[in-house]
Length: 83
Image: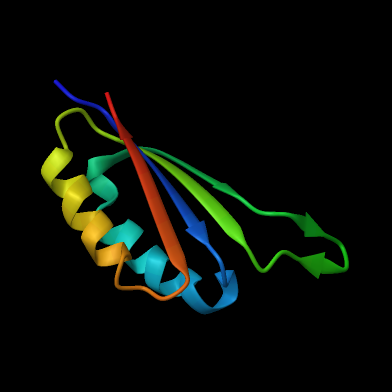
């Protein structure tokens, strides 16, 4: 049984967020935990974003496919850990 944790860095959040959100929806049944982080203030919103995902157990194939599709989106960086 393996566990995949993935970090997604959106360098231009306003440009790439909708494409990333679409993929997150497509793979929603394979993701057990999702945490989105960005700096927000009353007068500004950060152009960068960080998403941390935990995939369900034994979702290695789905995680690899998801990562491959993310790699095609400009200004998105992905790193993962497999336990």
